[in-house]
Image (tube, rainbow, N blue to C red; front, side):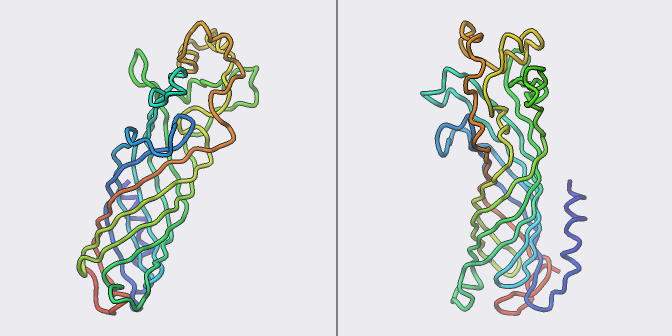
Length: 274
């Protein structure tokens, strides 16, 4: 991954730096969480997980920057956090690996007294990410996608195909960057990811025929419905998730970066280590 990021950043090195342009490399640390069928309130603090990453940012001008990044975080949720869905008894965790490219627009006035000390920016772009929802059972953590917990692969559900574990998302958010000096920057970033999948949590449609699923794959049936076993035969067609809404995930945290080379867009003075 480190070699990939280095190669991807080479185009930035080839750009001219004579007009207030400079290059940064840095790191991100914070938390990751998600919103989906197993998330029962806007923000579930108990399900925040450690996240980290690396990035390179090229500042084209005072207003515009571009950032290439790799972020990793874990998302998780469980029905026991909810008073209304505890009977469903589902849970999951999944590691997110994300590579993205985003554009940034600085909102601060260019001739403001502190324009060379702080930047507040909006950003948006595109990412590709991988995920792999798991649930805990008698044998430890189990990958859910191969099981087909909603009947994927059963002949009576031809329209339900296995979901992909690599997807695209649209990242957007807001950030603030403090220029500690000509070499070091410290910031904070709040970001959301709009995905195009409803299966970050392996939950997205109605219950399959649990009895028929158990005959083919007892493990899949056990992870599909984890409530009262006496009610399993009556769950077919009942809502397991909400297919009308796609899942989201979020990264928020601190950034630390170093200026490698270039010139300040506000003072035209050299800014960088090299």
